[in-house]
Amino acid sequence: MQLVSEIIHVISELESGVRYMPRKIVPKEIREEILTKARAGERVLLLAQQYGVSDKSIYGWLHQDTGEDVVPWVKYNKLKRENEVLKQIIGELTLDASWKKKSGAS
Picture 1 (cartoon, helix red, strand yellow):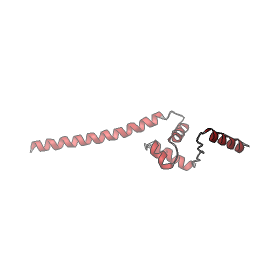
Picture 2: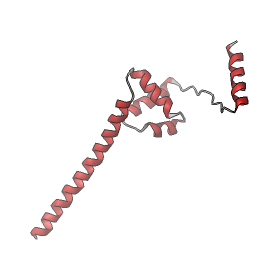
Picture 3: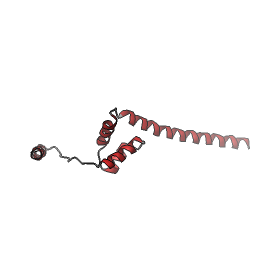
């Protein structure tokens, strides 16, 4: 009976011009792999493209899994990437300053 009502719903959406996107069922193992990578700092948009799911789905899973707002995860990962870039810049500036110091002393 539920299948019939779902078919009727899809037909009415198609007739009204709404694009129907069937739900993709992602295996639990793949979902956990995606969530682990997202928590480790990989970008959600890239994971969505890589695994063929929407970024909204991944954000929803993160929210479901933690029960918390996803924004802190996103902000944390963004700050982590920015921190790495800043460390690289500081390293380059330090190296550049030491080269200038050595070349000026010669």
